Image (tube, one colour):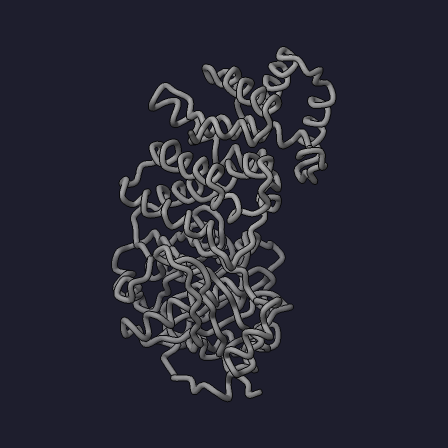
Length: 482
C-alpha cells in the first residue's frame, strides 16, 4: 500500500504561521482552518510546526511531508456525517532540541505573521532557570522570547514585523499571561528597553477560547480506514464537526485571518467572557448536572443519556429552561449553541462515559452548575428545580451505590472521606437526611460559601434526595418530565 506522501502532491504556500505543538488538537482545529481559508478565502499561507517538548511527533509528520488525513465524524445539522480531507498546510517541522538554529532562522522570515500554540495548561509557565543562551530553553514562553528577540534584531526593531499571538491553551486570559511571561524573561535576561517597547508596540497578544472534541488517532478503526483511503497514514486524526474559536483582540486581525469568508465559526470579539461562561454553563454544566441523574438512572454514556426519552428530556429542559435564562448573550445565540451541544451529545462516533465526567464532580458542580443555580435564584426569586434535583442526585451519587453495584468514585480523598462518614452515619430517617444535606451544603472548602444560607435550598435538596432514596432515580426523575 502506498503512503500518503506518495499519493498526494502538496502545494507550497508562504510560511505565515508558527505553530508550537504538533498534537491532535492543533492539527484537527487550527491547521484544518488554515486548510479551509486557503481553499475558500485565499489566505495563501502555510504552517511551520515546532515541537514544544523533547519527546514529540514531528519526525512522524516530517516522514509524511507534513500531510495527514482528518476525519470529521458526528452530527451536523441534525444528520450523521463522516467526511475526510487531506490537510496539506504544514510546510515543515522543527524539533528545536536538535534544530535550534533552524528555529531561530525562522524568526527572520518577513512573511511570518501568526503564532499559535497548544502546550497544555501547564505550558504557559515561567522557569527562572531558563537563559537566553540555552539551546533550547526549557519553557515554551522562554523559547518564544528568544525567537522574538532574534526577530527584533533581524529587522532592527521594525514596527511592521511584530507577530499576532493566538494561544489555544485552556486557561483564562491565555494571551495576556503569555505576554506577561515573555516580558518577565526580557527583564530576567536584561534585554534592552527598546526590545521591550517593541514587544508592546509591534506585537498583538489575543486571548482565545477553543471548542472542539478531538478523540485523536482512531486506533480501533485504523485498518478499516486504510482500506477506505487506499493509502497508509500514521497521523490520521479524528474530530467532531462542531468547532468554535473565540478570539479576543482587535477587529483588524479578522482581515488577516479571514475565517469568516470560509464559513468557519471563528468570532473576533472585544470580550470573550460571555462566550467562556456560555461554554462552561451550557456544555460543561449540562454534562456535570447530567452525570448523577443519568448514571443512577442506569445510563453509562452521554449519548445513551441524551437519547433516552426521560433523561434526555430532563437534560434538554435543564439547559433551555434553567441555564439559558441566566446567561447574557442573545437568546438566538444561546439557543443555537445549545442545539449544537445536544447534537454533540448524540455523536455516534464518540463514546463519552459518564464516569469519566464524574471525576472531581463536587468541584465541577461548584464551577459549572452552582453559578446557574445562584443566578436563577437571584433573578427569579425561585430555585431552578432540575438543577437542584441534580445537586440532590450528586449527593446520592456519592453514596457509592447504583442498584446494588458499587460506584468507583474518584475525587479528592477529603471529599470521599466526607461522604463516606456522612452516609455511614445516616440512620434512614428524614431528620438524618436533613443533617446529611446540611453538612454537605456547609462544606465551604468546595462551595466557598455556606449553601444553607440560600433560602429554601436545604429543604428542596432534602426533599429531592428523599424522593430518590424512596422511589429510586427512575421514578424520581419522571416527576420532571410528565
